[in-house]
Figure (cartoon, helix red, strand yellow):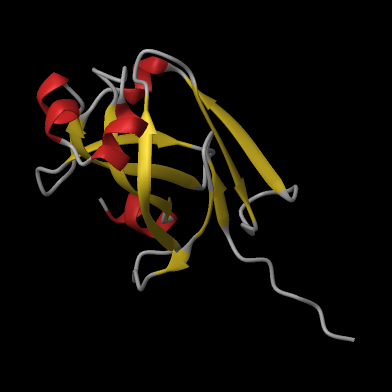
Length: 139
């Protein structure tokens, strides 16, 4: 009998993404690229599945708009960053804030998707990052 290994996934209001593990000497680190739209003025719901850091199969988190404000990461890139639990954080890479110029100059396929979404965040990746107890204790 073969037991299938759960692949870590993240699900938002539009899609389910299978996360890819990336090398990180500090701990678990997963990433996926995608076309992600976030309304920073409304609650944002994501579900993470397939992580050993959970006591259950999945964990759904409702993120308050306060945590959806762009902030710079340590490299100066604009991100949305929030904790999931004591062991995992989520980082969402922001491309830009959608405005009328972006909507008017977008290709038709994208324009159809972002029409009436001025002020929303256009993002291109999710990262799920494990917190390292050693890195916290070393500082």
